[in-house]
Image (cartoon, rainbow, N blue to C red; front, side, top):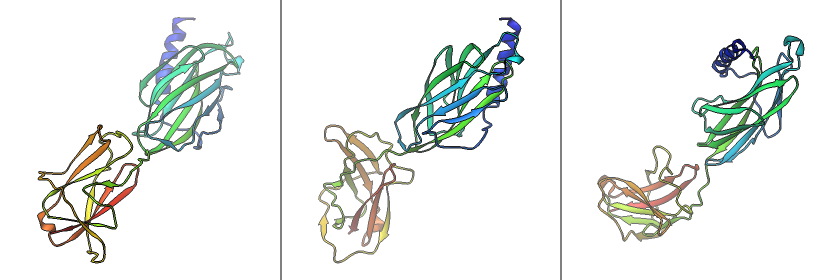
Length: 283
């Protein structure tokens, strides 16, 4: 193959990569094959999970294509073919971690783009690639799979979506010294209280969404049972830690002296979207 062809192919590849952000066609969940055809007879089909998948899950998109079938355009009836996967989201909730192909080689220029250069293939040849992704956050992954003609860089493009959901934590309730609702926890305002709980193992320390835990003043329920919080601490501020020995999280909640004579509901919201409440009355 001539060096002129190779240089031209590289220029066309650079042009195609720059244009990948343009999605062609409608979006569909990709639990079943999505299919498209290009202007020179190249085709692409993509399968993958529609979801929902939990954060931390690895999953794959399978992209299968055929080389262009219009042999009249090329004197040797062979054409360089590439399969690509491009994540369309800005700040996608998943990243591409690996790519393999039925022939040729693959590269991952960035976490949202993978290119498999399959080399020269006879017209109509079926080629395939597997792209592995890691779900990093809740959201919707929008992916474009492409079969590209290395001469003209016309591409057959198909798009699909996969839903990612936050992991669900097995919250087991508040542990001593805090009592669960409906009991009201009685303590002195201004002190810190260790709010202990288990999530069924070490889930890391990034378990709270922004702005949480939080509390708000509520009307004191004089008919509810009351239990004195027997363990409080002096704290300069709130903090979170995890003990693997006891499989226990400890969030030290720093209360305000101005809360004396009031009741408040403490809201332990987790990144799985669940809220867990405890009620306090302050002396």
